[in-house]
Length: 163
Image (cartoon, rainbow, N blue to C red; front, side, top):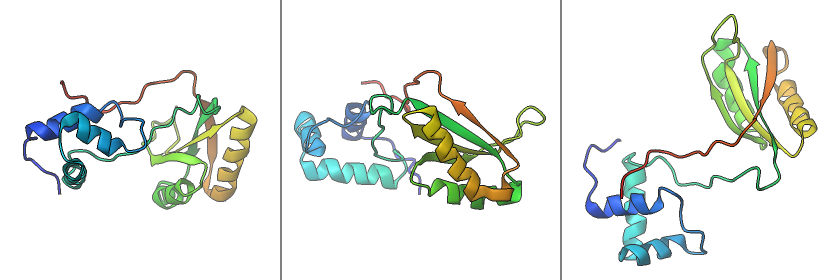
């Protein structure tokens, strides 16, 4: 259930303090609690409530694939039957090397693809081998596909609150 309740000042301070990421220390919630002068249990309870009410969607790591050596990043795009896209997307999304998988609308005739799956590799040959595994999984359901390689790094950020 989404909350329509306004953020209280401590919620707002917590969000502003973490919107650029959690502190990179062994105990990030403790560091936040100290910086905000709140008890650790309260910081954790506030995060739990903000997640539960939908004010924040998730807390997770966003790795820099390039820094990890994964410089051949390819979005594989697939033309699969619309009536199977959800089921096939679930299967592709379960593959350990697929980091994002989602359904997108087609834009015929120029863009026939409706299933997208992101694959990261240390070389284009590695990405192509992984995409071949997806093709094997999809079988005859895949009418065509392409790999769109990243040409630059885009910083991923969500909504930002002012301090």
